Image 1 (spheres, helix red, strand yellow):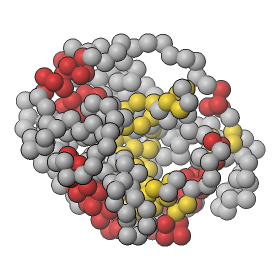
Image 2 (image 1 turned 30 degrees about the horizontal axis):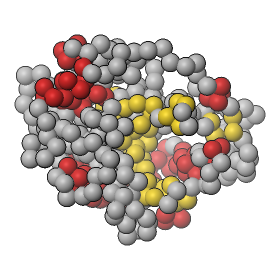
Image 3 (image 1 turned 90 degrees about the vertical axis):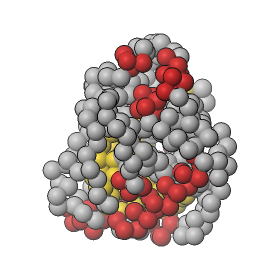
Image 4 (image 1 turned 30 degrees about the vertical axis):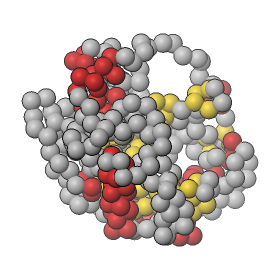
Length: 346
């Protein structure tokens, strides 16, 4: 989603255009320092907040516009760098090879990143043979919204009520909640249980391969098989939960960068309508502190109280054994793979 970027301490707010947003990594884990802002808000750092060495998702939301965690800054703490029409900033909720099903909690105030609950248990994404967990850094673009009441003219389906997902295909495994600037390369249109679920293909601007990958055809050239693996992963990832295979618009074809940028722009307009009560928001919490002409705008003190009310960290249940289950049924004939006898662990 594209948004007003939150200012650095003592700095000034800047306005980003839709195609200049930051992206966030939703589903990731790994080592990282605690949030550098929680202490200023009077809240103790928790495992959910740890990652990326910068602000946690809840603090970014408290300082930035909602819904969805604010794309306030990149990892360190300085203001975001200037973007071009083909780059965006992404927030990362999931990391490659990890299986925890973290999401942006759009129905909670300030939209923190948290692990899903399914049937009373923490949700984990299935290991789809020959992969373990996610095969890219999986995140979302702030300030976009796939409107569930708008039927897309290309897909014939309404949106999935979430920000646009991003598959970052660079070489580095990023941390949960990390803000990274990405170069948009293309997009695929997943039809997930009858809903349009766009998947932006992008690469971090800091990745060593970013200088030679500029569009979707470059991905095919320099990362052969990656797009095919991505399509098959999305086709089958819900099958272990006894759900049917997902389908794709455009016969599964990946569309190019220009097409992807237009999708991002249109979903940014839906997001703006959402923030100004021009669209049915349902249960989405739109509280924010930066979109001053939004009826959902609140004070920084109100946001601070929400952060401070976060429950203290607690020791959770042991990790489910399902995270190590390798699902192979029906996947042996997928074209383009040299299958191995067991799941790849990275």
